Length: 187
Image (cartoon, rainbow, N blue to C red; front, top):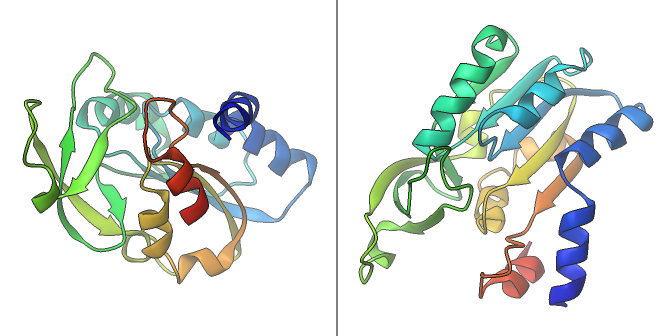
């Protein structure tokens, strides 16, 4: 299964979702982008005026700062939040949060689960997708790149997910993850 997952991962990335939405002419009014990293993919979504609102989330504070700089002129269409999405609100711990542009592979856990690490531990606030997305009209799309937390994010979005017409979900495809097969089946 690992080779198949690697092949799938390298074939379908966020620009694939954009192409799919455009070529199928779906009536998508808004997009949820969980794990927007530096905002580069968000800018690609913004290029299509049909997408009236983009809800972008990035928990890594370094990547969030880059996204905020890159999207500063688009905040009329982008709701940008520096939080982690989970199945329940509260504080989570992340390790590591470092690097010039953020890690892009932050590992999150409930507070009690990270205890035996020599890495610095950072606490970040978590929220549920349903709590972050207001009541919106029309159909939406979901781009989920949340480094192994997809099942938790989906569990926290039961209301808004009813309006999602198409979703692309990265399911912790990183080869170093021992949980990749389990995460794939869970999602």
